[in-house]
Length: 281
Image (cartoon, one colour):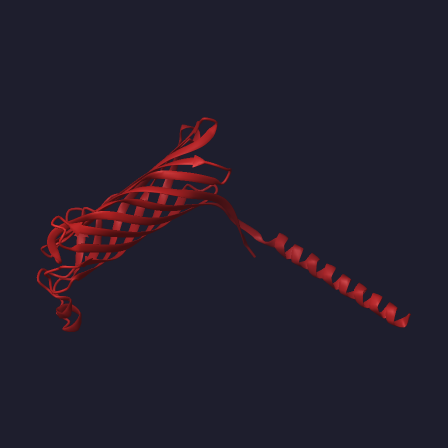
């Protein structure tokens, strides 16, 4: 009996301690301050299309071919605020041949885009306008299998500050919720890396012969812009299917060299929308 009473007493003591701990945790949680509630939207897209590539550092022949693009868009907006942040990660590949079918031009580019937008709700909330600046970081590489230049591979690094706008129109159709979304980034100013005309990578990186290789750019010397149009169809309260077009026009004329990577892609994807709550102790 003594052992049994001892076990019961031990269970009772642990039970009291556990209840006390839970009450304290509940009190702490209730004392936390609500910082804000955010609406987050994630777009996951993949696309296939046509590409047009030129880099006169490697060859004066341009190439055309097939483009593959992956895109992830993350948008966050605090409930009650008219400001929102949009982060985009875009990975692009293209496989091209020149006009004479003599060389293969392979290109890969990664773009990181951060935009900060101020929004307006019009037409009872069915029309949403957003405008603000976007910073676009580009990293890329291009290889020409039969280049006559000193180096068959060209590296690309750039930073652009671009005015950006998004228009979203939500409407009902066939007892479903739809949305038409258009986004555009326009050229303004930036900076990019480029070898000079006739300069080899050996001269630049091994011998250290700098020759105007970090070049300021404007909308005149680098008329780069990007646009996307998508039609979104709701299949649930938080899930949407999207279908659209992505046009990406990366162009520059610096150091007596011309380069461009232009692609037109048909994009398909899925959109997820969810709400987060943030507390501060």
